[in-house]
Amino acid sequence: MTIGGEERIILSETYEPLSAIRYIRNQDFEKLKDFDLNINTNQKNYGMKGVVLSKERISLNHKNYFVWKLKANIAGAIKTIRIINQKLPFICWMINKKHLS
Image (cartoon, rainbow, N blue to C red; front, side, top):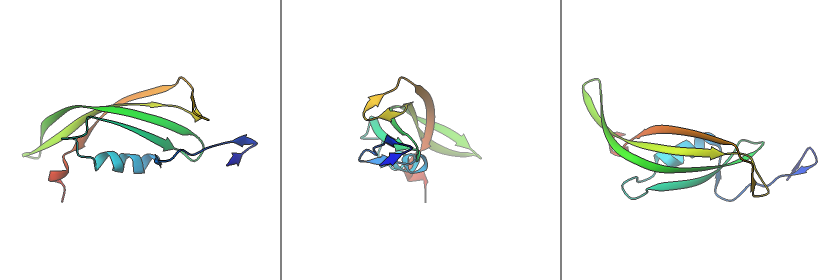
């Protein structure tokens, strides 16, 4: 694909940001200890690598839930597989799927 005279590629197994969150949320973190995704924002490609840090118990409205604490880095823009040195680190918590109905 060419945009503005620049050749762009979309890697296989690429997700847009909301689909990436859904994909991560649906993983079995009992078995999965790390993940590596390609993300596309309609303009640029990014790589996201993360690890499972821990399983934690939280209490909300007098109910206990187990959540997974994840840490990830988004490295940006992957242009023809050359990674420009920009990173966005973050930590997130995902509720254990068993608590969802």
